[in-house]
Image (tube, rainbow, N blue to C red; front, side, top):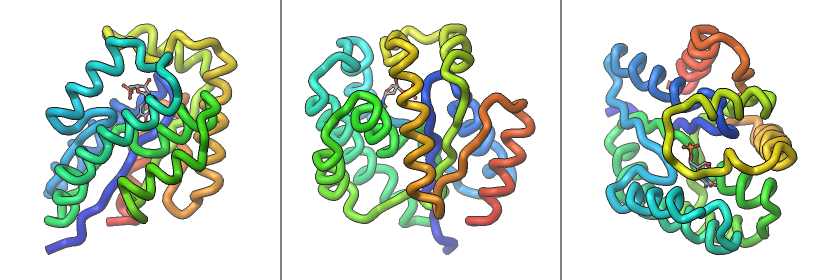
Length: 207
Ligand code: TMP
């Protein structure tokens, strides 16, 4: 049986990562791979219910410790019930957001306690890390325009001011710089086809 892989898609609002994670999943399936496409917060039935609570009860304004605990609660269920077992049976798990989102949003951009983040990460994931992470980078103005055009009823971080989105962008770039082995920055202003080709070339290297 071939070794499973874990590939994550990360970035701020309106970067196009959700579209690209779907395109990668379709491409891999066409090539004959067993793929699981999932997302955070969410992924499990309980995790999706938790997501609904977060996006419909102004989760973005909760105390930062509550936001971090919440994300890692949903992530623990997701990791133990889906991500880990699916990788163990050789599947390629593609996840739209993962722990880097908690570090970028609740940690760097909102100013949460990074030591608390690291402790929760260790408790929930141990030393587990994605095999490959795509960091979608775009000028936040452009990202917010794109995000506002989506048919999405979820109440998220889009309403925060531009300085928050600038911090978030820098947070992801810093995470990518600190983890060069797994992170690959994508210029999200490029055409959809150009980006999907870049992603496919990188994915082929880890398969
Ligand atoms: P989405 O933009 O991918 O639909 O994600 C939903 C929102 O959840 C988005 O505004 C970012 C937020 N989020 C966090 O704040 N921390 C996290 O750890 C995750 C996974 C998502």
